[in-house]
Amino acid sequence: MTETRHDLPRLRPEVTIGPALRSGPSVVHRLKDQRTGVHYRIGPREHFVIRRMDGSRTIEDIGREYTEEYGRVLGPDSWRQIFTLLGRHRLLDGMADEETLERLRRDREAERQENHTWLHRRWVLLRPDRLCTALAARLSFTFHPAFVALALLLAVAVQALVWSRAGTILAEAAPRSMWPVTVPVMFVLMGLITLLHELGHGVTFKHFGGTVTEIGVRWRFPLLTAYCRTDDIVLLHRRTARVGTAFAGVLVSLLCMVPVLGWWWLTEDGQWGHSLAAGLLLFGSAGALVNLLPFLQLDGYVMLSHALDMADLRGESYRYCRQLLSRRSPAARDRLRAYPTRDARLYALYGLVTLLFTALAYSGLMWLWYGSLRHWMGPAPAVLLLAAETALVGGVLVYAARRRTSERKTAHG
Image (cartoon, rainbow, N blue to C red; front, side, top):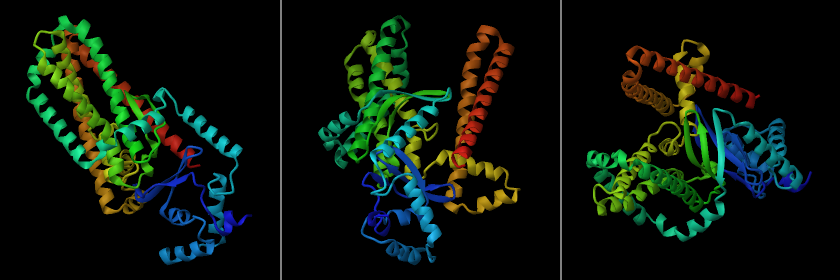
């Protein structure tokens, strides 16, 4: 036992501890070993002890501060558990070697690969950390509050113009005679805007001190979306930095509509370029605004979660609502009483709004599909087909929920 490891414990320099986030009825902190890429969740008491392990305090010093804060003594068994946890993951300075850290890193990569299923999969297209570092340095002026305010005003003005003339723009994008040219080109340009959207997340995250490991495509049933991996966002202590990182992609997408608006404005109706610009304006704007919805783990959901300092707003909301439905059980009532009033209201409200949104959105989609299918196969077959589709989607969602629950129980022993 060296003095560094026990008498004056110090975390390795690569270990970073995030801010307090609400998770169900409790508070959690995320701790990451930057060397291995592994994230850990710790409670407030563990956080109180671990963040004081900076090499300047003895365990007696930390113990006294803990007693002053919580009114109880950290006995030998408690210290043994803490050092066992830190030692198992090689988080203390002087307790890790390169071979062990590399093994932990490989285990983490293998675990991520095992999480790839037909319900959830990622395909990495770029490793953009160096690019985002260079862009963050060159574009540092864009993070000035005055520039951000002007960008927001410009984006809002463009959207006001687009949606005030939505009927005209839709009619100009609709001529099918131009689709053989406009559709492929629009597909390419929308892909470019999507790339800029993800780089917006990455550059902003880099500006606030994060590491951007991946940009790629993600399949999460039933959606195929682009993503920028910013897992370390939970380590940023400034709430504005976390919300800003989540919002940056949407803002970039909206600003991309500014030159498209100019293109639409300068071209004449009837030209393929005008039709293409109209399609980009309409679908590009709609796609960006849909991203602001606080559902389906889109950017708006991430923004809302971090604005509320919630670690897993969607998952915890569903768990809280399930406990509400089973509140006749004494165990469920005990768990419900553990929730602070604010959190209980937020979880219940988010669960209710999500349920209403999902029901309305799915009902609207079914009505649109029914309107098309009944002309092809008649009303009765159309209803049967949509009912079968609904049953299939419901079954997949139930299977996915049970799988996540099983994996969570396995992860927690």
